Amino acid sequence: MKKVEIYSTDNCQFCHAAKEFFKDNNVSFTDYNVGSDTAKRAEMINKSGQMGVPVIVIDDKDIVVGFDKKSLTNLLGITA
Image (tube, rainbow, N blue to C red; front, top):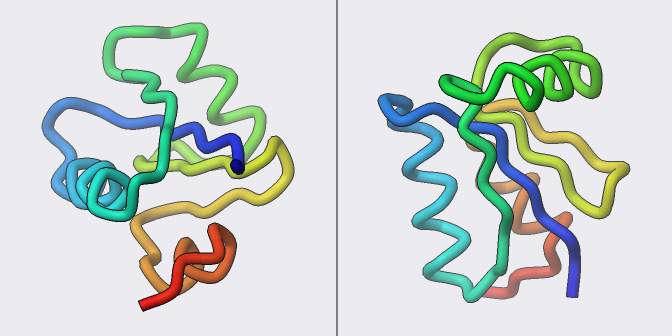
């Protein structure tokens, strides 16, 4: 099973879409709310160079910025 982390905020529609996608495909994930956790926000910016959310990190190496369903499907090995 892959390690999936998502850096998100409460009011981000793409963050909610990504988390629903994970749930629908039985993908376990750790959610970091960068709206309230400044340490995780700094970590996210350091890893991705981005301030926008969501930032999704898979197995500590693959980074997806935004909700890119095609990339996530490929990286997670999800079949239709």
